[in-house]
Length: 313
Length: 282
Image 1: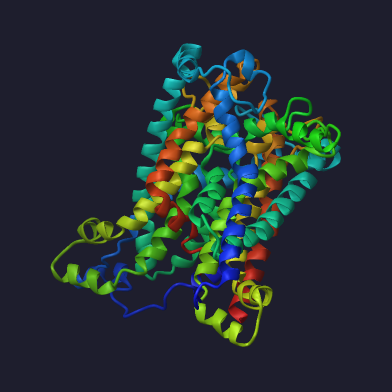
Image 2: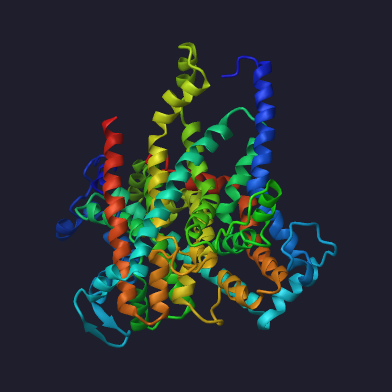
């Protein structure tokens, strides 16, 4: 967390650093040209619609809540959450989904990026094609893939049938549904990961590769000893972005499986929505708090760890 | 790097290119072709969900039918989505440019706290029902302007980071010169700094427009009902209604993808620059 503040440029010539105290002096120069009230519009919107609800959620997660009145019931919602398998499984699913998708995005994104920055034909076209799904509506992607993954009519199974593979219930098999959705999420988000990596690869000074070549490194060694170590900042970004996205993921899961079959592909975000629809606002908010804690527990240490190593280098 | 293109390199460049085109063709192009072909078929043919050339092209009929269905809800949705996107991105750009600018320029004891809040905004998942509760208290639940403010609140953090990073590249001497010339804070910002932010503003606008236009979750929670339907929700509504007329469902996908496709064609470079800026340097 604090890393971010350290990255700011060092304080420069102290021009009117103490605007407030100096105001009485009535010297025009001492008033800062950067007034604090510039923060105000953003702070109001953010404070009211983001910070306040976040803090309120800690209280309301401890209540039985119907919007109009709430009754304090202590940790009962959380007890329910962790004792009901269909709720608890959503936590496990959330973690699996996030880890699978961000892992695949890192590996495939890096491979794609290296490939798409090498001397191949039609690079521009290929980059656009890989990136385009990022722009398409998630719901549209979800609908399309649930059609393509249909066990009987779906294109994927029809193609596989030609090779002699039996019908696979991509979205109807409880053991498979979550992975199928994760695959689609990777399909959709890979373009962004690739793009971040491409920017990283392009930023590597060519001299490094030349030096490696002079030392007799082949293409693989160049990748392993030059590209890969220098891709650390880009990897940090991809991991953190896709973990945040993966842990909060809702749109795709909701449009493709609605958490089903059964509860086999429910994640925290879809549980929050289901409980909200069912009118269990307290339980829904408890789900939100669990999601918050999970995200914080994973992202903050990771952030700290990845950034610290960067500084060490 | 290029010490004469050797034969091997040329082979690699062609073979690699062709393999990549085939691979991405299967993985990335086929789904989009499938969407388009199904959207062009008659209802009966589309219901087979086959990856075939349409025997009869009825693109225009489908377009008309999708637009007319359910009392022109798609038109309402497009109007809503346009208002939502334009309004929220405009507000977002102005308020976060102000924050990013002061945050970068002025060192106060609040800086650490504000940076922390900005990062929290990127990471913390919004608490849904409490947000609805707050919005109800303010009387902005189920209103378009309420949703605009929600999008602003949730999208702000990213914009602030972009603006702060970019303001750092503008020399302070410029501010000092303007102050010497007697410019007040407002004039300094809007007349001197804001115009210089043009490139990053374009980036932020494009990136956030994509996010807001494609947003599904927030309209679902904070603006339910047909009145305020956004284009993403029409798809969701059509999914049940059109379960037998796939051609219309896919035509809807085509129609709501078009604005972003056009945007991508025009602003390709800005999107790429925006999404990757800061990503590499951290």
